[in-house]
Amino acid sequence: MKKIIGITVSVVIALAAYLGYGYYQKVFRPNTALDSDFELFIPRGAQVEDVIDSLSSNGVLKDVSGFKWVLGKKGYDQVRPGRYVLQPGMNNNEIVNKLRSGSQDPVRLVLHDISGVYELAGKLAARLEPDSMTFLEMLTSSDDLKPYEVNPQTATVYFLPNTYELYWTTSPQQLMARMQDEFYRFWTDERLRKAKDMNLTPTEVVTLASIVEKETTKADEKDEVAGLYYNRIKKGMKLQSDPTVIYAINMDYPQRKITRVYFKDLTYSSPYNTYQNNGLPPGPIKIPALSTIDAVLNHKKHDYIFMVADPERPGYHNFATTLRGHNINRDKYINWLNRQ
Image (cartoon, rainbow, N blue to C red; front, top):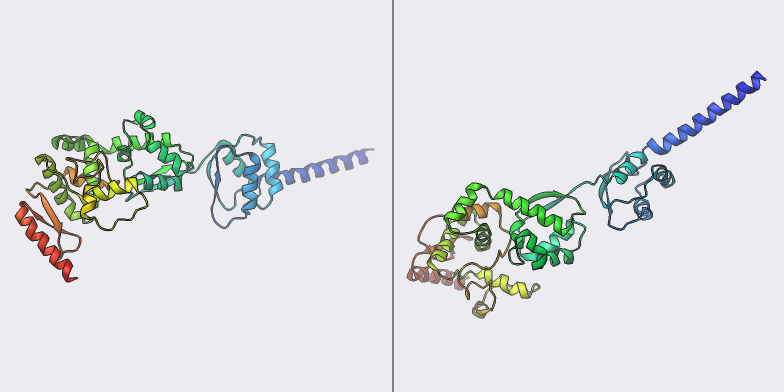
């Protein structure tokens, strides 16, 4: 009898060990068939079956049934949307814990050299879950923007060029709040003082910087160009900036490619057309670099109010204080064009 009991106990122990080892394998054995990291994007409204299907169809898991078993045992019944980076060698326990806790991995949003809300909305949609129309509706809605103290013409001032870490599920509202915080952080007391000395608001400084950046790509010329336009502002002169005309037309016709501004374009009716309206346009015509904003705040003090491209120094300009001097520079440039 004792022998039978001993055999029974041994069988039970062996069975328990076998089952325990099987459970351990399902839970803790590496279960990813990955050679490199895999980005799992779970959209809002996704169900558990959608998550399983995504992992299965992309060949992420070695043992799908084992993963399902662990999902059930750990009670994964509330899907949390987001971007989750799965790494080679991860086991079911690690994967399920990550998904169940909603431990998202942030995306890197790079903002650089963007012109207008259409392009901005596209850039945002390429890195975040909401589509471009959702972002565009936010950026062009006076009511939606009111809590952030901007309007459809000035909303882009908050989007300072930089690299930001955000969750993929960030909503347009959450993004605006984040960008507003970044904007206020950039505007230190010293920068605010310099803007006040120019009798300009931070938004107006960014707007002027956007024009300067469109006029010159030369970093060592930006402060000089900024000084020229600031002189015009102080004198009450029209800025007469070609890039503002191009922007005005593209606001109404986004698909139109403009490589040259003609005299007929200078009469285009728009508050952004600085040939038709005095002062700055109602908002930036692009997202200027931080260095360009600082170039405006630290503009060169001179008497120039005219400029034209310098044929002897590609990318640079010749400046003048009088119309007569400007006409000499302009004729020089036109003659160069004709020779080409």
